[in-house]
Length: 250
Length: 253
Ligand SMILES: Nc1ncnc2c1ncn2[C@@H]1O[C@H](COP(=O)(O)OP(=O)(O)O)[C@@H](O)[C@H]1O
Ligand SMILES: [Mg+2]
Image (cartoon, rainbow over all chains, first blue to last red; front, side, top):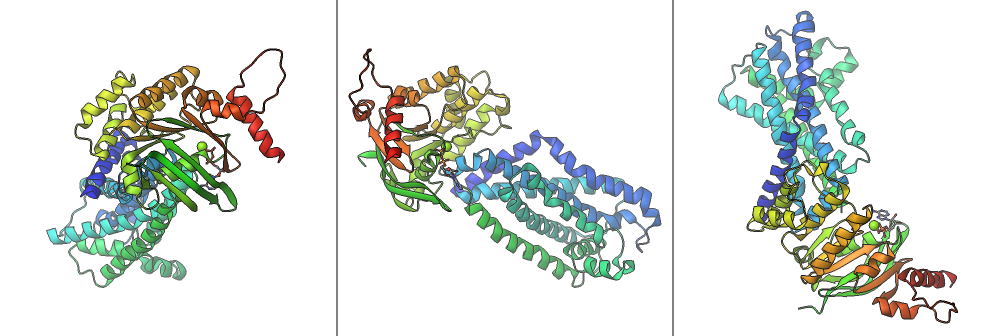
């Protein structure tokens, strides 16, 4: 009860941070939107995906890029709270320690959900259409939440262990780059063997394929299980190391 | 009720190879201002962090308001409040929001009223709706201390409350500390400034080389001062003289 109350109070606090610095939301959104515009209107014509609507093909990967850049701010907010002594202040108060951390995790989920919705709206304007049922949309939402959660716990490690502001956010760059070596922009079939092996066996491809199939009301096959395994696996490992790192924060 | 607000017995703490606290003992009585005096790196913050349950001691016992800091940390946290060495305020929130945040976390019934009372008391009413990031150093420290008073904890830790403040800000903090003690709050403050300890504290402990090398009232400490110093003008030794004399003796050994 007290845990829940404290988490809600602290969630309110960091959501206020986001609302007061809308530039962070814009910064998070600008790159994926630019990439989406670039690929759809400049490069898209030359890309053969077998999908008549390239926005439909592209959207899942763009959403993952947005989430990967969003969690850099999760790490940054944690880093700042530790540096400014706010964590110590809360920890010396009758506030449960897990609330302090979970408030940041929930903030990450909420703010990334906002980014995802905004990007889907822009994609709709650009011609994105989906035949997905409500259940399929819920499955998409579920997978994106799990993906966000997995990356958020990575961000927690980065935020707690970083020695500088740059360090706190730099870990997200490779994550933002991962979709480019996946099935997010072009089918993996025509990639050179080495690249293709990597692309087909990294988490983004399975997640992108699953989300794409769901949005097109197509069967997801075993890709959904691969996607879930990646998300849950990363979450469990990152959660474990986050807890280790958190224990060292006074 | 425990006789002392704070009781520290043989507390030890090391960070990797460096032994910071080599078994320290002191007690703080209810309602008094107690100053832990020591130079930079002496282990003042480490001591405060152990007493406020942020760090676990390697050995020894410490209790606050009768509760053991390692075995009953929740009870300790309900009785104390910590104003750390560096002001811990949320710069993006306004002064009032900072206070209301703490009030909500402490479950104080009327958060808004509590915040407004403290804002007036600390001369921050006009700045109440401004973001704390825009406050001056003195204002930030005042807000920081005000946040520590939410929920009227019975023991307050102030870690170098005046370091980095201009003389005016320093006097303001002194006034606040005295007023708090007059209201019955127990205060443990750390300082590097001898005159600060002299001005504020009922009793003083000097932390040096990982040990409490002297403690007592100012008068008691003055008695430790080596006598037989022939001077033409009769002069009371200042705390600085005592400190330097004791530290010098220890190091000579
Ligand atoms: N987390 C830590 N890890 C390693 N060494 C530390 C840590 N915290 C403090 N120290 C060391 O312990 C000593 C005492 O530090 P501190 O308690 O902050 O002193 P003070 O507050 O009196 O200036 C210093 O030498 C400092 O470098
Ligand atoms: Mg210190």
